Length: 89
Image 1 (cartoon, one colour):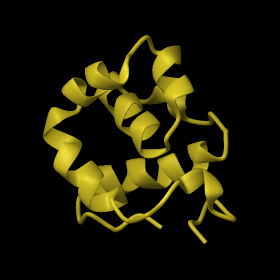
Image 2 (cartoon, rainbow, N blue to C red):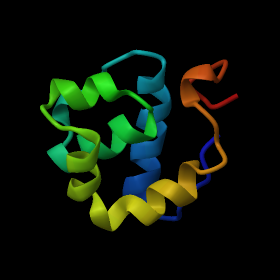
Image 3 (cartoon, rainbow, N blue to C red):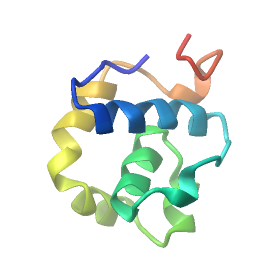
Image 4 (cartoon, one colour):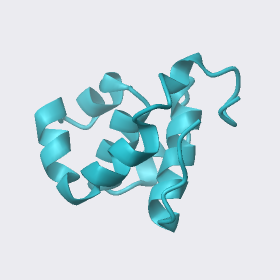
């Protein structure tokens, strides 16, 4: 499970990343491009980056101010696609 960041926007995106890691796409299209980049990286979904026309380096550049939060939230969380549920368990 990701570690709560204390930033409500990032925590909301992290929860969405849990859901998207299971190959869903609900809500992805309504996010801003920066939010889409963050969620795609956090959920380990490179296909979502391709869908919005971004490479990994481009996505990292786009979310540069959020990179420390991404790392702090997910560094020891493992691959969310392997979690049993979207609740991170």
